[in-house]
Amino acid sequence: MKCGPLYNGDTIVLPKVRGAVTWLQRLRGLLFSPALPADGGDALLIRPCSSIHTIGMRYELDVVFLAEDGRVMSIHSNIRPWRGCMQFGARDALELRGGVAEKVGLKVGDVLRWAA
Image 1: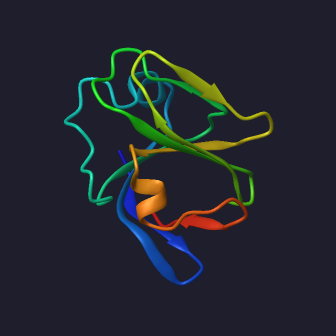
Image 2: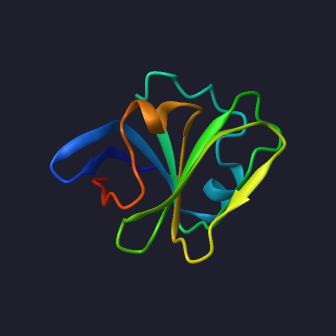
């Protein structure tokens, strides 16, 4: 699985973002993985993806949906286990530990770039 930092402009927003780009990686997502850290040091970018679910998760997630150009289309905060969300027109979904999107300052309209 590829891994690299996520940038907002020239600033590293998240230092370690793993990419789920194959069918099997997208299917597994964060299931059976250690919990994402609450400090924002780790995240999962699912590509392509316009909807997610938290079935089987043990903790809340923030989900940031990105357009094809990397623009943040929507941010869904603190999605509890056994829920779901979607964004029409999104190409990617960035999954973070609940509360991290606000902690690192992500906003709708930001343009993010994954360097992996």
